[in-house]
Image 1 (tube, rainbow, N blue to C red):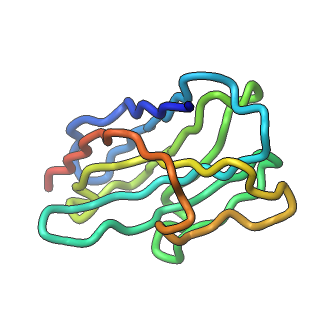
Image 2: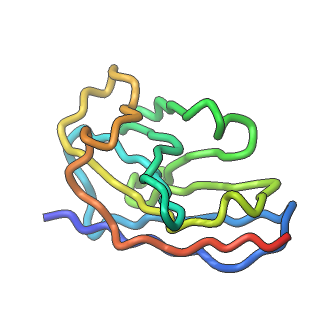
Image 3: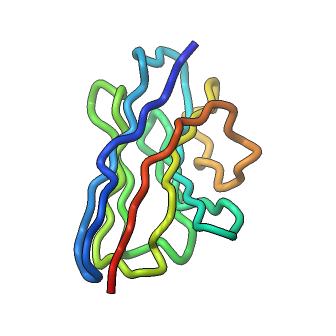
Length: 127
């Protein structure tokens, strides 16, 4: 069973940057897709971006240009670099994964595609 643990959240002023990490509890040897989602108070969870084992990435339109998803060479840690943060980016950020996702397939931007979730890390952006 693969467990996911997010880290890197915190408080930052508007215009600042944060880097979130999602560590898998063990090397995922099969093909997979991993994604970042967020949920603000009173709102539904929304997708940010996804990345698969081959390094293919896919972004929600609103995240393009400010958020960058990546993974380390060992494919144990996924990273979300967030720049030019705004107060509306304040939310709980979650990473998620699904195994056996084809390496040729674009990462899913649908929450229902993911079966494993981390506990989340809080990001607060002040104006």
